[in-house]
Amino acid sequence: MRMATGRTDNKRAAEHFYDLALAMEIQGEHWRATSYLKAAHSIEELGESVRSISERGELQKIEGVGESIESKLDEYLATGKIETLENVRDVLPEDITLFRNIPTLGTKRTADLDIVLGVRSVDELLRAISEDQLPKVPDLSEEIERKTMEWLVWRREEAAEVPTPRAVRSANLIMSFLKAGGEVGRVALVGPARRKASTVANITLIFASDRPDLVVSRFALCPEVLELTVVERDQAVGKTASGAACMIRWVKDEAFAYELVRSTGSDAHVKDLAARAKELGHRFTVGGLGKGTQCSEEEIYEVLNLPPLSPELREGRALPDGPVAEARDLLGDLHVRAASIDGTQRVSEIAAAAKELGHQYVCFCDRVGGRRMDLPALERRNAAIDRAADAVGIDILKGAEVDIAPDGRLDFPSSALDRLDLVIGSVNTKLSMGGEETTRRVLRALDDPNLDVLGHPTNRVIGLREPSAIDLKAVAAKAAEVNAALEINAYPDRLDLYDDVIYNLYEQGASYSIGTDAAFPNEIMYWDWGLAMARRALLPPQRLLNSRTADELRGRGWRK
Image (tube, rainbow, N blue to C red; front, side, top):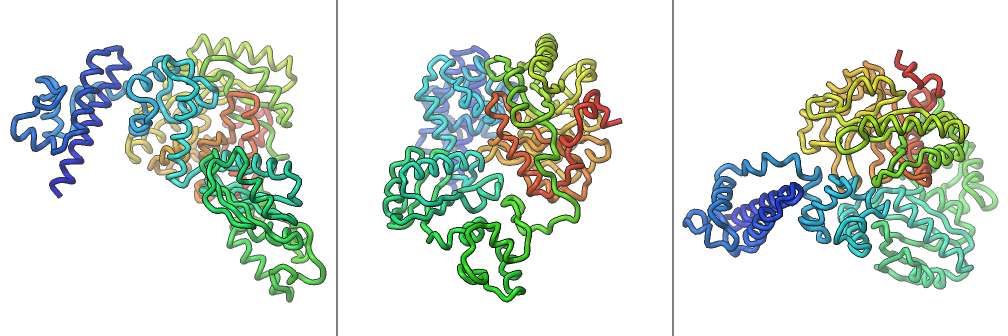
């Protein structure tokens, strides 16, 4: 037990000095950063407990430990804290534990990410990688960018939590590759990924073919498949670039439709179908549903005297008497960004992409305040919106995403927020606050009439940051009371709120707002995932701000 405690002391003490080194590097105090980093390495590599060494009065015998660092070590061993570090905690990235563990970065590169790109959290790191921004940082090459992403994917694989949109992209690439080989008759995605669950650990493809062995061989050659773990004549499993494992499984052509329904699930839905078949004197098996073979899902539901049900509605949840929101009910995306990380603005391009998708309007909600968009930049963006609206021929609303300060204030001048059509307030800093503190912080923010939508309420980053312990029932009830909305952020790394949470909050009566958080035209396509979260939660259209017209949203008429 003593040894375990000693190792814990060493590890935690080293982490404190790593963090001090990073804070000093960000502040430009390179000599102090080097000193703290050397001490951290020495403490981490000790063969005995730093506490035991302290008790002998021999801390200065540790390489890199002088009088100043010795006093800080003694302070840590006595109190569990170092005051010098506590005074600079605000300088450190939000997801400090994760940044500390990324092997490709280290102290200097992590500091440069903050200084050059303003990357201070894992969600910002993911965006910077997706926008190919890391090579703009000194000593951060394309290879380091690639290896950093590989490590983040590995973390998601270890957590068995991969954003389903990322996994589905892998599935689509694999299916296209298999079809190009000419040996596949039919191939389809099944399981939770087809039902558009927010996260998956694996994906499954079923295929029909006269030569399943050749299809399996081609699967092994697919660039999206990084490593094979199981190979048999009619099935195989491999790791994909998304981090999700992918199984391909052969089924007979005459059983394809049945297997498509059964393997899509959910178990509860399939059990309901089996019970329905029994009521009608059938068996829910291949060939057990009356004469002939059903060639499609629609035919199977028809035999069961049931309307076809979209995969995302097959969770076994009792369907409401009223309508569930559909694509045609929703009129626009209520959270896109004009500016990407490098500051480039794409107002016209994103508006055009939204129009092409069929939206009647789009609302730009760039992050404002701090190191993001300041008041003059916001005014310039609004002027660009006015020009783009006429040129593109789509309604464009002016909004912003503002940080909710630790004390619950909206961290941007209220006079500027007053003039916007929609304000999203989000907790983007001090993410380590406890659940009760965060709940109070958000409840106070919701009392501000300028806050229209609470952005990504749980702050999760799938597989990389756990949801906060915020009391969502209290928050949803408060949102309903003040006629504010909760966001369904459709960006793949977040999907926040997701369907299970929304479904469990239904009775609180809150409204919701779907936004893609897109900063590039191609990211507008994430809209389908926001819609899927709403549909899986069985939300009716009237509970979604996106069902309102641009005229109802403009000037916040819907809140009056």
